[in-house]
Image (cartoon, rainbow, N blue to C red; front, side, top):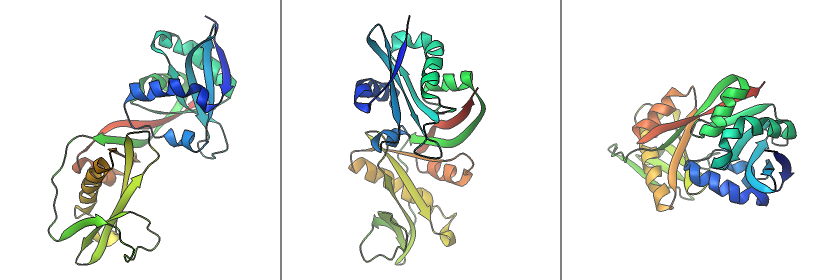
Length: 244
């Protein structure tokens, strides 16, 4: 089987990418790379038949193209992934692979073709609806009169007229997912406020017709505990490895 790898525009691989997202059924952290034009894409063909694609972007500098973050093959061709991947690597010249562990194909290639593998982030998706409540604390949308400083969050927790926590959404995930973020003012931490605002943001996400998701740094144990308490579960990890 002769494989051709050719650089192409995003529109060329969009039908294949739709299959990838449909099959994966998870929040894809690097979706924004396509939305903002930070990625190059490559089409894989054999005898004129389109069988897959790959994407690269810059891990530290957006203008670089040093990192493979997508690699998709139609099911009949996946047994040849270990043969097709080196051709893609040779064409794009990347030195790193980034992947989510809930993407089994690229994860298997990361373990097969890279070294110095590190986990960088924990990924979370919906598990159950929590019923947290703190007396005297209210959740609401930010108003123009709220004094927020540099904080541009859309939602707040308020107690006795004081803003104690804030949060909102990052809209760069693939449909229908949305990324939740939050912060609690230092003086009010370890009181359950983080989990409470995450719980309420999950409700808002559904009202926006989106599925809530979240992530945190691999070493941020407090954020992990906060998200789990608010009804999330760990669904994967973000890994990075150096191509050998």
